[in-house]
Image (cartoon, rainbow, N blue to C red; front, side, top):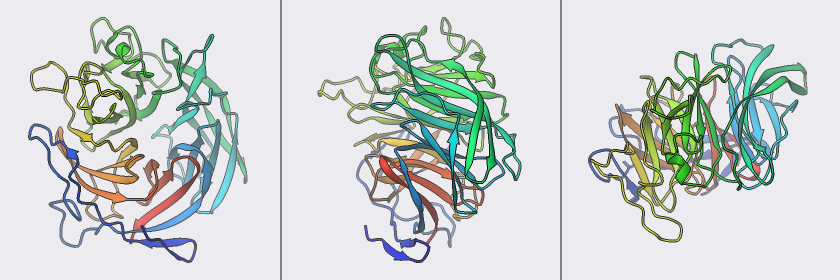
Amino acid sequence: MKRTSIPKPFWALTLSPLLLAASCGYAGSGDSPPAQGAAAGDPAGAWDGDFAIAEHGSFSEPWASAFIPGTSMLFITEKPGTAKVYDTAQDRLMTVSGLPQVDYGGQGGLGEVAFLPGESANAVGTRTIYLTWAEAGEGDTRGAALGRGTLSCPLADSCRIDDLAVIWRQSPKVTGRGHYSHRIAFSPDRQHIFLASGDRQKMEPAQDRQSHLGKIVRLELDGTPAGDGAIDGALDDVWSMGHRNILGMDFDAQGRLWEIEHGPKGGDELNVVRKGANYGWPQRSNGVHYDGDPITDHSADDGFAKPAVNWTPVIAPGNMVFYSGTLFDGLAGDLLIAGLKSEAIVRVATDGDSAREVARYDMGERIRQIVEGPDGALWVLEDGDGGRLLELRPG
């Protein structure tokens, strides 16, 4: 991919969607290849798939990001346990103190960041902040934790988090350093937290109703369980089960919660999350085990919820976001997925509970995170040490 430098450092990139033969299952209708160019049905004059990209520095294994509501300030977590706030309007980077002690290693460290959507103002002031991280337990065990605190930025070059306290812990803590998931989505009414809890590479606990592993949990804003009896015999906060490693969750404009998760060897999944549903892992998957041992595919009558889209070869999702802005004409309502192994932004169109991949934009690097900025620009984080922060606008 050729990148031509122009001032500030902006690049004009032609990121034409790739025409793929990969499996992009359209629910109920088998496999469907993505469209070339803009999504089918886009009006004439819609965004043509080209980006102009500006680089805004690099970070130490960036993992998640979120704009502080009402501001131009982007909070960025770094997996080793540090974080930064970048003022996108003033081109100013700030340090963050008051962060938790994390268990760094493998896929673990500092994870998600989220802010209460209702706390919106044009200055930071004090904000409620939610963070997730990998937390050490007894012996050689670890688990995901969710904490809540108060963020302020009293100085021009620094912010701090006060009174950070754990409000939820993944149970049980187990050995290993993978599949924490710990992604956050707020309900559209802003009253509940949906939190992804990965299977921690243990597989079978995803079907254990008394384990958090392989689940999505629903919480009050203070971390109190709010599962609402979704699954008989399950923990009080469990909303859905049978998940593997969820790395993206977001609500669409109609209030449906979607999640995307890594499959094993093949079988990445995009799912509509329904109260009480069982998504089948590890009993069902459209992938196979890494050693080649088969896993029973999803079928129409197996009693498990089936993915709206599955990918083999995998895209290895980093996160996802439903685009709601107007800057990219014709993109509103579509789902954008950060691709790690695929080194791309994957675009998915949804129709009710159905979905299909319509385009893939080659980025040439592993993409960890994508969020929408206040004016509709896309802000992308590359994966790994030295991962860059990129601002994407129509080319």
